[in-house]
Amino acid sequence: MANPLQIIERGFVFVRENPQIIYTLFLLVIIPFAFFYTSERFLQIARQNQDSLERSRVGLLTDVFVEFAHERMSDPSYLHDRIRSIAQQNETIVRFDVLLATGSTKMIVASLHPDTVGSDFTFLPEQEKTAPLFDLVQAYPNHALTDTYTSRGARVMRTVRGILSPESPVMSRYVVIDFSMAAADQRARESIRNAYLVLFGVIFLIIVLLARQARIIDYASLYRKLKDVDRMKDDFVSMAAHELRSPLTIIRGYTEMVAESEHLSSESRGHLANIDRAATQLNTLIGDILDVAKLQEGRMSFSLVHVDVSTEIGMVVDSFLRPAQDKGLVLTYAPTPLPLIAVDTDRFRQVMVNFIGNAIKYTPNGSVTVSAQEESGMVSIRISDTGMGISAEDQQKLFQKFYRVKGTHMQGITGTGLGLWITQEIVHAMKGTISVESIRGKGTDFIVRFPVAKPAV
Ligand code: ADP
Image (cartoon, rainbow, N blue to C red; front, side):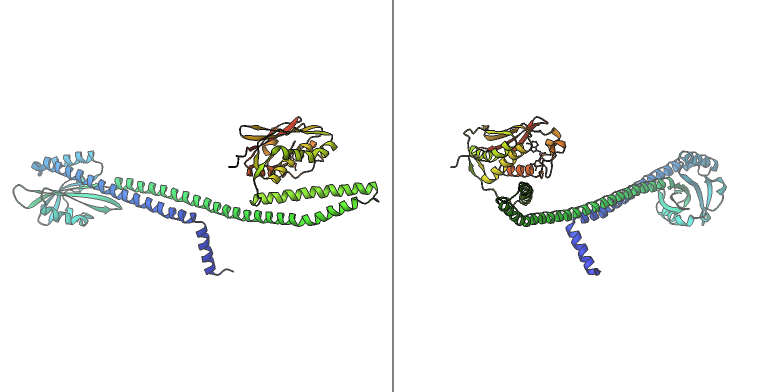
């Protein structure tokens, strides 16, 4: 069991190896915070603007009312008509009273609610909430003063304007108008709700992305582990191949020795030939596996020298004359003088052995022709056969590791499917190219090109 300290340490290492977690968490905090702050700020400003707009509208309305009704303050029916017509045009008005101050009472003389006429405004419910407005109005006669209070959960904006009587300097009348802010506040609440919905959407998206990223991190560590296993497998295969070589050499040596004996029956000779064939095949396979390992790990060395292509091809062709003849094939090569190319001699021979060997292997009858020529700064070597040919589809996959064409015509022909992959890697390493032209059932041409070597200075 890991102790808490080890768990913390492991977590720390994990985060250090996957810094994208930090960025994502940072985004997860920063984006909602920025969103929250901006929407709150925006709403605050919107509400302030709304309030100040409302305030000037109410003030204007009060001023207009007082201007018109000033001369007829003692005519209640005129005041009622005015109040009603103003309230009809402004749906948000919930109270509109004209008060007459006598002593400590403020009697309602005209109102949007006629049933309250005759009562003392001071004793109406919730009036104490805006009592200071009436004190302030004393200091600012003929000014509309505004304040907001909350009534049954909704904001109300109250405007009070005092009217000085022409006869006395004492404030005798007041106009009180209440505007309900419920609709405006409702709209603001809806905007907040929508903003938060968007915010939750964004957070949800970030969480989804985070979850995906966690999976990507999983894949990345899985990929690393797979690569490690792959490397271990390659190491094991190349080690096993090395170890197989020595016993195989012993088997081949003793097979050769026994085959030299004169007292062997023809049946035993046949058995020995089978052993030799199998051992040779195994040897080729081991050679291929070791070459693949070397190429993959970049351990194959190339010592490039200026090589005369004609001589090298001639030697390889000569070594194949016997096997070709055994198969009843005509193997030809007409050497021509060619410029030198810069290649590793042994690797160049290996390439030619593979192409010519394949051409003989996959040609049941007919001929194999090797030719070489110079064309636009390249030495082009063509290995043509009249064999089984390769379909266009197979040509695409030909150079993949372990790829062998399938079909009845391949029966009995052994191989590893590694030769062309190795050949291609070697040719590319020596700055050469390979192309293939083939018609299924007619034959195949492999063309290898190497750049002409620059003259030594
Ligand atoms: P191997 O010969 O060991 O199978 P290679 O990598 O050398 O592996 O070749 C891959 C496959 O390409 C062969 O299995 C064969 O099907 C096809 N091939 C190669 N050369 C020829 C050729 N000259 N004609 C027809 N098919 C060929």
